[in-house]
Length: 307
Image 1 (cartoon, rainbow, N blue to C red):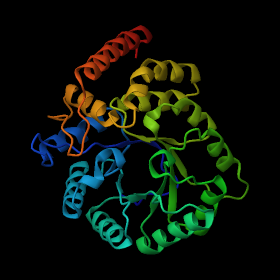
Image 2: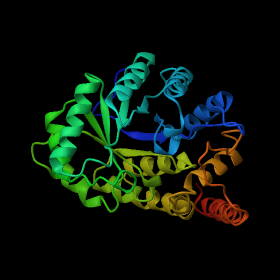
Image 3: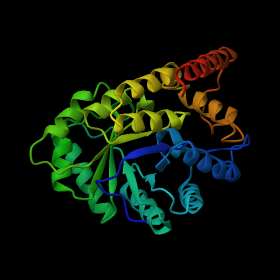
Image 4: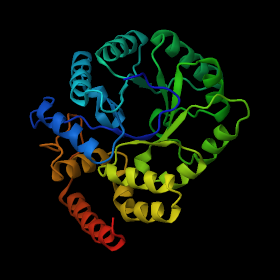
């Protein structure tokens, strides 16, 4: 399969990392999860992202997990690997290893230490130098990184660094940023996939996004919204989105959101356990009752719209 490039589009699911109750990587669940994602409409997988508990894995575990996923996918869809790291040596080592194993690209978010426009550009220039010819996704997620990247800085990166082929857009509010980038005269067009659990997906698609790169526990929502959008049926896209929105909003909570996601994936049979590695937040009985209420409500609404 060819490497990631500017033409990428569709639904790239941000995968969770399955663990056993004892905290070991659960490889049988990983196999089941890959198949679940593909059967649910994913056209790409992104692993070792922020919601994949990447910082909780050792360097050796990160490489082993990535290798396992790439082999399980077996070229059916592209695999992107999160390679963000406080140091460039670790970033380069992981990136080279996963690309050698068959990944299509890596994703990098800036550290919270870069604050000015020049510092942000300089950081990504060093990322590109470290990665060499490896294509990378610029992750713009200020809620997590604390780094505000202006549209003009993204353009500067794209214009100067040809290996930057995709923006993972997670700014909030950020619709105007997508519009700015798509209207920028003479700018190289790169792929824009959006995050934030898909809670702004219909609007982001209308602004010019090419799809989603996020990890909502119902990938079929993103796939259905995107298919309806591409078919020119904005009303159908919004109807599908509306049915899932209450649960997507609940899952998007900072902190317990990953627990909610893993709880639902376990309930759907995609993974054997909802376990997270420590440090972790454990869902309360009240949390679980709310999730179950939203799941039942979602099921009724989907039946009403025939989805």
